[in-house]
Length: 218
Image (cartoon, rainbow, N blue to C red):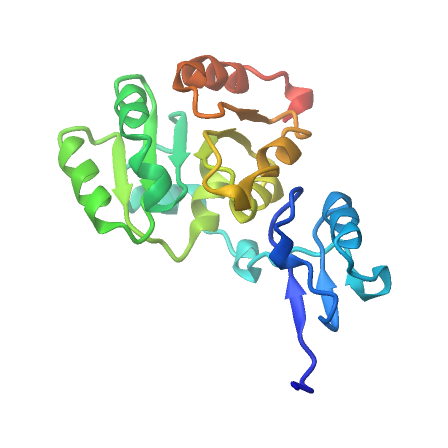
């Protein structure tokens, strides 16, 4: 009986859960052609679909200088820096990978989201390594995406599109839940992206491959 107009904003890039498709919605915002086709197959009228549209934060436009961002963490702006993110769930699965990367000649910025438990553990594990910075939730993710050399993240649609917006290289470690199914496959159209599908033996080779990409791919 509601008379208030309402809209659905789809935030997956390829696969579409049945719940996204509501023929009764006044408008549905779709980010990609694949999602638009899936919505139509699930009964949403094409004249009610606005595409392409994905909600990215306006704050992405406001980036501090690299030297200023790195100085706040005591990092060297001239060293290769990896930004590892994906929230607590994803970060928990990467403890071994973080330890491996920390043993190499890289600087790491690990962003754990709102999971204080894993942030505290990683801070304790790497407290003697000044090249590893472990943070909880940050309000200015754009400063890390803009200035890192390679991003390591799960297949979250928002993270992938924000990384693309900054034209950065990225390693997608895995998908979390069925809602991310298809995001990695979509992102792999970008030659700067690699997908491990949970196989961490591919981490170092993929990283080296990205760091050695020819200039025309950057």
